[in-house]
Every structure is written in structure tokens, then in C-alpha cells.
Length: 435
Figure 1 (tube, helix red, strand yellow):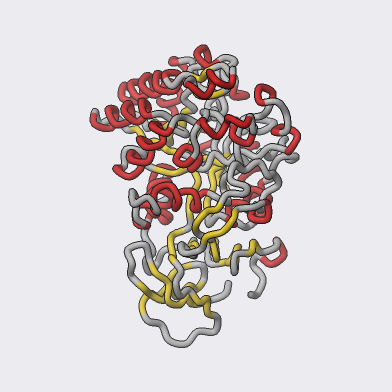
Figure 2 (cartoon, one colour):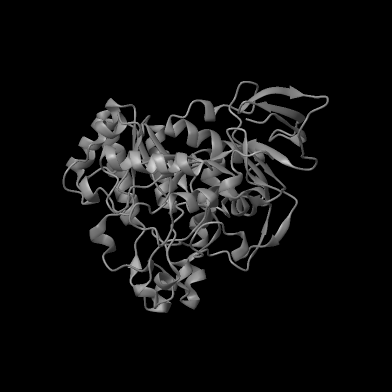
């Protein structure tokens, strides 16, 4: 494994330093002399590699939309070094065999650390508990369990899942959506849905499940994580639960920090997502909640689909957006350039807190000697039009195509190996080769 020096980088706190990496580990910080290989980082920001708690890689079964390899490349392009792969695959990732397969595909790809998320229920059908403990004790070392895409609507099943997750020091990540309130729903229940003649998706469908599950987590002394929080009311429930001492964490997506239901007025299905885009008032509350720590983390909910799944009438189109490549750019636009967060808080929300939630001790540490060299170099001064060429995955259903976004991922290092250099994702045959 090659040794190299990153020279003249700025850390999140404004400190400038050189960083020597050897054997996949940071071995020296400060002013460093000569080096055989140098990465020049003047004007660039150096952060720990980003960690996504919510990625859909589709494999096995959905390779037409994404594979572990193509999704890993998309993650590296966005500065990610760890992604957690959701279990809505075919077959469902609800057994040790399937989660081990996903983990092995990630190791073979070599771009990021792929951590499988195990399903809560068999087949994600919400009826019978999946093999939580067996998945946790498998080679995949699963610590997050979710039926994402489907809510664990049965309170008895959810309580049991929380109890079993506690046994393995894991966390249940809930897709909070009361299905009886959202049957046939197409867009946030508000003025835009009414104008477009689309069935409304009420905010209370999300908020009621979060409140119920917070109380279940309290009663079992278990950890609950709330996926893709999207409403102002949900923020208040999470804030109440934290004040009560309940072991709850929450994530928000970049698209819920930036886009509103107004984007749907053209019936462009790139903006159709679950949970739906909400109002400008919700966006403001979500941004403030990320700033004050009520919301712990930013997670992409990267949801690739083939073009034909989005090129249809709104009601028939698939829900979801790709987001790995654009996440930090949208976060910069939504909360850094608006003055709500500085780069230390972005590091917290995109690296440190996700690592803590997922139980990744080394990745939760700041940049320091002895830390693994999962790193990303950003140019925060860049500004450009985001286009299809910026997408490194298999699908192109990004809501940001054609938009001007700030920032650029210049380099990503995974265990000291460059997966992205000069803004270009390296080819598979280049990973691990001399550079």
C-alpha cells in the first residue's frame, strides 16, 4: 500500500496541515518534509470520509438499477467511504447468507466499506421477525436493521425487533409511515397536491409512528433510529423524545433540506420520493434541527431506478432519487452557504454521528495520527452545473440535473487508497494499483 503526503490541506476547524498516510493509516500531521508521492491540497478542505446510513444498492435482484460496484463508485464520487446498504433486494437481505453476499460484493468492488442493513421482518412483509441475531453474528456483522421502503407497522413486531437489536448492541431504523394514512398518496398533503389533483400524503402519518416507536424504545431501553425525517412535526417529536432521555437518533436527506413540493408542479417524476417533498416551512425547520443537533445525521436515501421507471405519469412512476454524488454539494448549498452550519458541523453530520450510530469506532474519530485514512478532499469554492457526467452510478434519476451547485469532490481515499483523484472516479483496475 502506497505512502503519500497530502500537503497544505485545511481541516474543518480552519487549521492547515500536511498529512502523511502509510499503510492505510494517518501516521503524521504537521509540516512534513519531502515525500515520494504528494497530493497538493492548497485551497482544499480535508474531512473524514462521509458515511451514509441509508443507501439502496439494489443487488441482488435489482441490477438493472444499480449494483454494489456501480453504487460504490457513486459513493466514492460523492466523498463517501462507508455506505449502509438497505435490505430491499431480491431476495430480501433477511438472512446471514444474503447480507454476507452483499458485504462480499462490497469487498470485491473495493471503493467503499459496504455495510449491509438487515431486514427487520422476513421478506420485509411486517409479519414475522427476521434473523436479527444471526445476521449480527455473521461475517457481515450487521448492526442496523430496517424494513425501509416499508414501515414496521405492527407495534408488537416493532417491540420485539427493538428487544433483539438491543441484545447485539444494534439499532432499528424505522421508515416512519402509517400505511393506512398513505394508501394511494402521491404528494405532501397541501396546496400543491390540491392544485395538481394528487392525493395528499399527511405529515401525521410520519409523526404518529415516530411517537409510537419512541415510546416503544423507551419501554425496552433500546436504540431507535428514524429514517428520512421530513416534517416539522417529526422534528418536535424527536426533540421531545431526546429531552425525555429516549435513545433516539434521526437522519435527514439532502433533498428534504433543499427541495419543496413546489418542484412537483411540472409533474416531473424525478421529484417523486418517499417520504414526499414537503413545504418551505418544513425545510426551514429541518435545517434548524440539523444545526442544533436534534437531527443527528445527513443520509442520502440514494434510490436508483431505470429511466423507464421515472418516464411515466406521476401516479405510475417509481419513488426515489439518486443522491450519493450530490449530497455534500446540496448540504453546502442548503446549510453552509446559508450560514446555519460550518464545516465542523458538516463533519459531525456526515461522518462522526453516522459512525457513532452505526458503531464504527475508528470512523467516529477526528482526523488524527493513528486514524484510518478514509478521507475526502473538497473544493468548497467551486461552483458548476450538475449534470449526467457527474453521476457515477447506473441510474440518472437525480433531481439536481441542470442545477448550479457549489463545491466539488476532488479526491476520496478509502483505507489510504485513492478511489477518486482530480475529480475522476478511478477504474476498478486502478484501485490498489500504483498511482
